[in-house]
Amino acid sequence: MAPGAPSSSPSPVLAVLLFSSLVLSPAQAIVVYTDREVHGAVGSRVTLHCSFWSSEWVSDDISFTWRYQPEGGRDAISIFHYAKGQPYIDEVGTFKERIQWVGDPRWKDGSIVIHNLDYSDNGTFTCDVKNPPDIVGKTSQVTLYVFEKVPTRYGVVLGAVIGGVLGVVLLLLLLFYVVRYCWLRRQAALQRRLSAMEKGKLHKPGKDASKRGRQTPVLYAMLDHSRSTKAVSEKKAKGLGESRKDKK
Amino acid sequence: MLLLLLSIIVLHVAVLVLLFVSTIVSQWIVGNGHATDLWQNCSTSSSGNVHHCFSSSPNALPRPWPSVQATMILSIIFSILSLFLFFCQLFTLTKGGRFYITGIFQILAGLCVMSAAAIYTVRHPEWHLNSDYSYGFAYILAWVAFPLALLSGVIYVILRKRE
Image 1: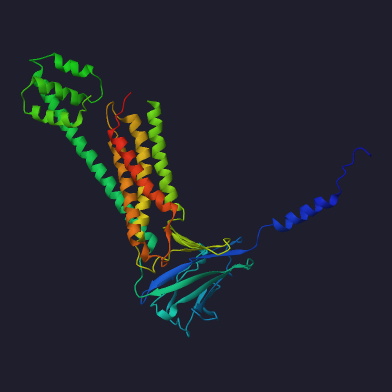
Image 2: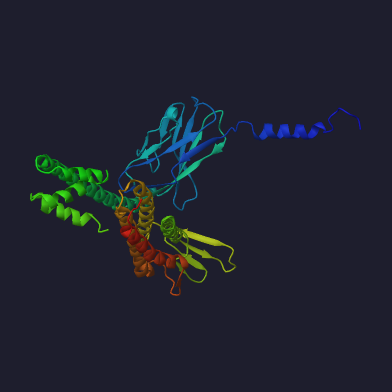
């Protein structure tokens, strides 16, 4: 039982350190992002987006490669290459003169546009990005579907229906509140005119109405006036009072 | 007074929970080892261990589904809105006033559930092709939620605020 020296042997500590340095070192891999599916109509154009994340800065030797594998085919052919700041477009294959480079390496964008789609363009496109010294990584694939007419996506239809109905209901609600507000304001204006007329004749009803509380003074005031005056507003007040005032 | 308020809120929340469960759980139609709901077809293998779910492919079949799914989601939205509006009106309504907006939204939610369940009842043979089936519990919950939602809405309309 020697005191002092810590009994743990150095090897587990070393192992942990070694392990962490291997696993937790900055991962040198490039990650490529593309859409999963793209829909296009015959004869139109479609954009294949490709973006990437790299742990290194974008170098001048960065290269993008697009490969195409036809639907049901087994081989992938290379249709586009970008290297050293220069795009190289397919000039002999099926995509002859149909590809346009719209990407920009500085914005980490490697997108291309395919013009004048045809049914034979159905297939899988692979985007491959290499950013030396960061060259190890996964590529990403996008599947192109060519339709005669692009069908509206289901989620869009669902969202449109729900949004439409909600919008209509809220609009009706808003309309109702606006109409009610205007109506009440007109009643208040009318009441003010009446009370101005009444000042000479009767004193009490005005005070009584204000005593009954701050809530809905207009309704109570109108009801009081409907008893005492024979103005045109009497009919209006009665209509308003009976529809709103609950019989307690 | 507090008891009444609590019971009304409990009823409303129960309706909301029923709506959620009915929309999300996959048990509208059950048959031998497969279950369908609004969103996907799930089937279990005979051993009962493996679930395969196929989400409804959007562009394939003529679909009554936008209407059923949309109305179920709408009913949930209306019910949530009405709960929110109830609390708003509880504190801002004048004494003696009635909870019209809350009641209207809750009644709308009930009507939406009813229309969703009715459309589903009428149109579901178009969607799945099995002849032997029975309705699952989520379908029953949708029909149960409808009168409860109507009841809750009517209670809100006749309820009056006191101090």
